[in-house]
Amino acid sequence: MAVLDAYCRGMQRLDRASIPRALDPVTVDRLMVLGLILGGFTWAWPGYLPAIQWSRVDWIAYGGPLVVALVAPLPLLARRTRPLLVFGIAIAVFALSTSLAREVPTPSFVVLLTAYSVGRYTSVRSASIAAIGLAAVLGIAAAVANEGPSIWLAFMVAVFVSIWLTGDTARTRELRSEQLEERAARLEADQRAATARAADAERARIARELHDVIAHNVTVMVVQAAAAQRVLERDPAVAKASLATIESTGREALTEMRRLLGILRAGDPGESDPQPSLASLPELVEEMRTAGLPVELAVEGTPRDLPPGVDLSAYRVVQEALTNALRHSGRTATHVLIRYLADTIELEIVDEGRRAGATRAGATRAGLTRAGLDPTAGHGLVGMRERVALVRGELEAGPRPEGGFRVLARLPVDVT
Image (tube, rainbow, N blue to C red; front, side, top):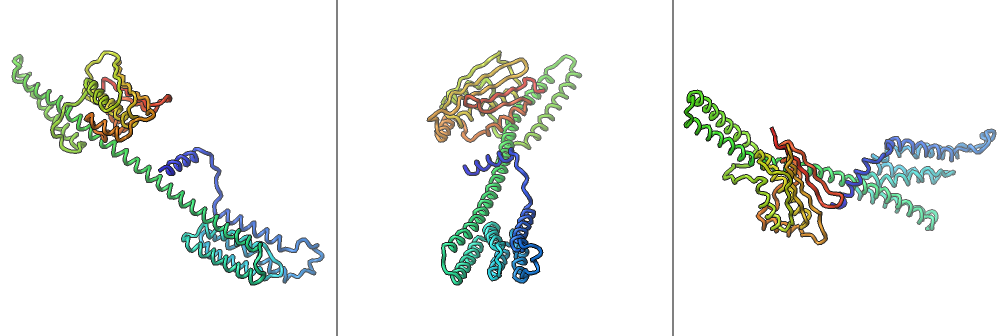
């Protein structure tokens, strides 16, 4: 994972950097072949002789080197797609050139380049090793048979094998890079999927809670309308018709709301506990202290009744922020500030960051369990953002320059 993270950071730096455009591989091979042809032709052409003496040149002796200089580099055009075949042709041309009256260095360069290509572009590594080993053995045997062992021969074999090893290493690094890119892509896809699942799970949880809030309010409306219908005596006909409409509309709204929110629910609602609110914050703070998180709660402004959805969302934001502080920062001082403003309510949760010797993850989970909290519940910022977006609020969350983490949520009091 550390290697993958380093690779991802490197790729991000490369994305930000200005990288010059690379030449097309086919263009590179063509330019290389053209350069070798021109160099070999210059070497083999008897141009150093005055033109008046060309009639005395032994063109038969010079013809072979000229042909070799022109033909030997051509197989390099296929060195990426047929590396083993090109390597065999280069070896054959090199062996042929050694029998010429005038030696041309072009076949030697071609052999070295094809040795690199064998290591770089051969898909089966065992075939690459076998080809380079066989060529080295045959070359050593031929050299020993003609001239005997020498330091120069050992040097050339070492260079030959080193160039192949360079190509093999380049191929290994390319394969490693491709694996890291694929792994990074899978990790990014998994992270997106996990975030989407977390958002879906949080929406389902919100739907369950809103179901209880709305069902309670609408049920009260229906009950009150039905009671008023029975007891109201003034203008009974009009009142009865009006209240009957209220009752009918309320029952219809309750049925449709249950049907709509029931789609988002993960299961049957079952028995519903009373939904928490900001009035329950002292109990939540005490639970967190029991779990080992020193929390200080402060309130600015005059507390007032909030819409049920805003009240519930505010409580859940504070609960999730405190749970994250305990889970990620250990037993560090945390401050909760509730500000009641004219048309909004602000929730600010700040922790001072992990200290040396902070509680380990296992101890943190144990503390959450002792406090009666689910150590796996919630999805961090995903859940808080869903909560705040539900009531058209704003959320700011991130690390502080001086250390620790800060969450600031602004929830409008009037969500209509």
